[in-house]
Length: 66
Image (cartoon, rainbow, N blue to C red):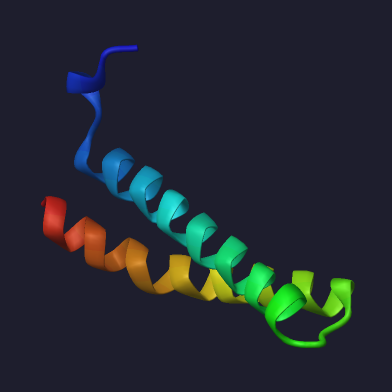
């Protein structure tokens, strides 16, 4: 794969996906292990927070890499 051929939107999308995944997994573990939350509720919370963080981080990274 030629990394130099990536467009700025590709870089922003991949970095935003990585950041959102990290935030979602961290939130899931915090809800499941840190708080007495049921496993499925923790998964929903982590997934929801990861999705919301993607929606916030992706436009910021697109603006940064333009």
